[in-house]
Length: 314
Image: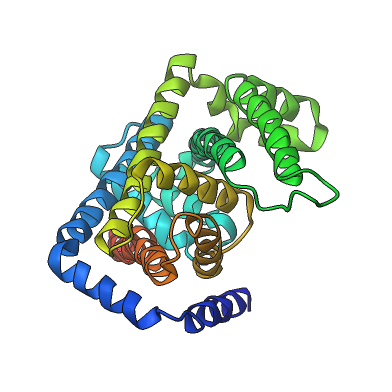
């Protein structure tokens, strides 16, 4: 229902554009002239994107059992196929742990959460930088209103800064989480499944943050390259900063994959629309990235899952 409403809203916004036909013609012409190279690069970077995530997961499960990079990569893609219809892709955990030994499966969930934790911290940090740029350069509230320009946006920014600081402190003090499991009676039995989180050193956690930051740059570059390939004119650094706000919003909104496409489209139009009025290209690039970075890996992951099932049957 959410996807249907958002899809109709986007369609209505596109249909009432005066120069829609010209925008589509320009997009098609640009794609034919130079866009195929950009599209190919985006496809190649998709493997770098999920390869970096596989490297993170390989590092995370090493205290439980060492696995090869290719096995970790297969687990990541299988996790994507599991996550396609689950809120905020929590099904990824179920797909990944299939590639581990039975006695390590539940323990690996806590390790996976640590990896998601590191990616969230990077997303929030880049998002706050982008939001700071947005607040200082775009005023969306009238000057004569009761509140000053961007009043509520600044309140949200302040709250997010506090949350970010607390999250980073907790990330480097994961033993606090274990202490909670030890002190709360109904959580004590589950303590064995989260003990792995205290086995990561500060160096390990910094390494995970570095991989998360590199991965963030990769999938951000994918979106910008696709926008350029489809003919959108923009300054790279401005689009990167506003795109970081889009990722921040998406990280805060609970959704499932099919609804995520509509939400991401609306949010992208809102922020990237500050740089260009070519809504058609923004929507096309948003849908393209969704297909390349989520649907294509999910299809590959589904095929890999068949291999896991056949192996177990044998």
